[in-house]
Image (cartoon, rainbow, N blue to C red; front, side, top):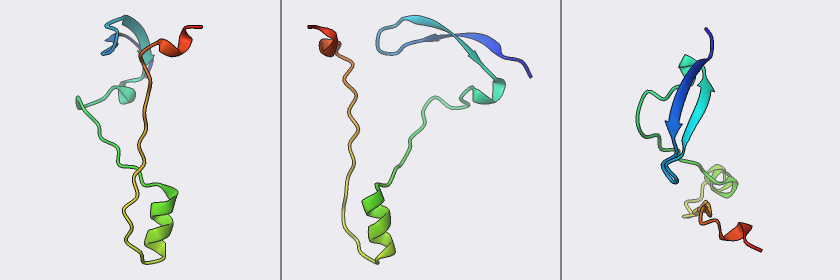
Length: 68
């Protein structure tokens, strides 16, 4: 199966981008949620514990980091 030429609009800056993807790479739903466990949580479960541990990922898209 060949690559398809599609357009994707960035939801942050509304820029139109040409993308090249295979059919199986195209999402079938509008939203995907990933639940990720930190290594400490996995280790805690193996030890039989029940601690609440959170991991927060932050992405700075403000553009302030490129100003000198």
